[in-house]
Image 1 (cartoon, helix red, strand yellow):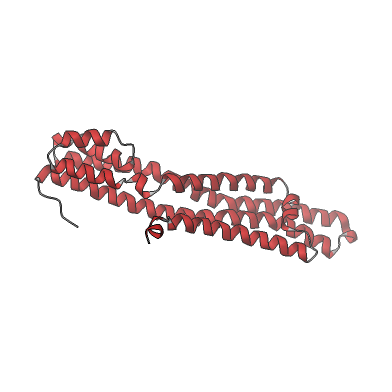
Image 2: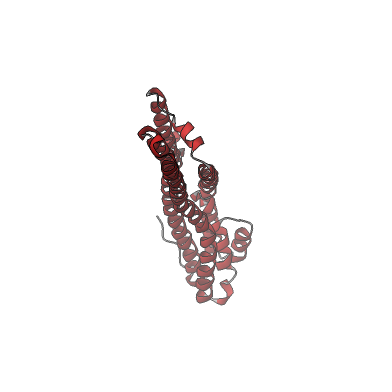
Length: 246
């Protein structure tokens, strides 16, 4: 049971999604080879320069996705031990000690708590304003990583469609120039190669959209938890009441 609790199930789901997509692509390529047709990899090589641009886009996109999955983990953005320590120090009346602890931490919670505690002497309104400003600035920095993934996921199908359009233009130009020498099988081959770019674009976009969705959900939840932590610090400083248990 303890081992199951330590598994990062969301990260596992991301990995499963990526594995499913690339396994599907591999199966399609293998099936093509069994039937005697040109394999998917060979068609990708023949698709032209846009296919290479898409491959570079996929490498960049999945590298950024992996980096975001590592850096946007909830326990890094909001260390539970930091939240507990700050609450305990403020509850004891040691606001300066809590300020020092927040200053020494570079997490999202640390940045928001630092902005909040640095305005403790100015009252509740000043702390609320500082928390809102810091939360917006730091939250936007984190959300930009998710937005970058969404941008790549949106661009990839467009690049694929561009490659397909270029390939179709070349195919029909060759048909017009070739006249009677252009057979149905040659035309079908040219069209299938052109469509490979669209396929690659979708294979890049779909997993990135899934990853971006789950990362955004995790990030929004963590931001709300950090806001609650800082609001509790403000409540303790301004009222001196004991924190609610549970």
